[in-house]
Image (cartoon, rainbow over all chains, first blue to last red; front, top):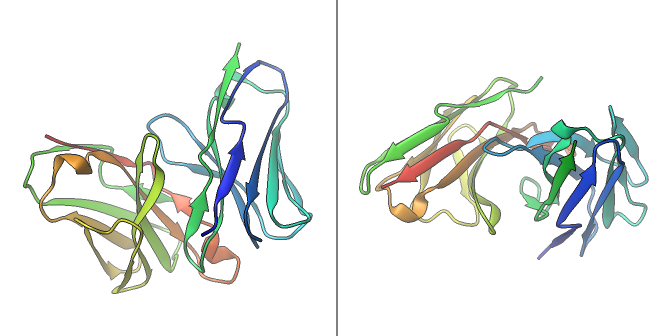
Length: 110
Length: 115
């Protein structure tokens, strides 16, 4: 079945630094989703991508749908302490179901 | 803004009790989902529903049932709670449409502890 490899597993950065994380799939996707989850909360949808090559921004966040349709990237510019959390990528494994990456744990030192 | 709400943030139940977890979405979404999330195991799909009164098993349906009597409401039922059902339960919804149906919006979660 489809698997998502998300990297890095964790990142420790200083406030103000830029962050980059990515997800790769063993098969082609027609949708890429990026979520953020704070401790004890549900995942919040950050960015949804529907077209190969698409580059979409949401404030300081930018995500790209890879041309091969097998990968996606999420960048966070000028990180701040509230960016701390777990970032998940996700893609469809059927008409309704999603497969999720294992997450990137981001820690921002003030 | 899409809003998915769950009836409780924290719940403590005893082994053998019947447990109801309620989820409501206010965006007229056709599809609704129940997941559980455990450390090291990630998000696992329990059941989903693509229409009122329609349901399909996910990856780990054993020990659970669901009910969808109204479009906006999707209930997860633990017929006889067991300690291995202690977990974070997440509800999600998505609209229909070719791309949209894969775009799921999550609720805040219910942390269930079974003693």
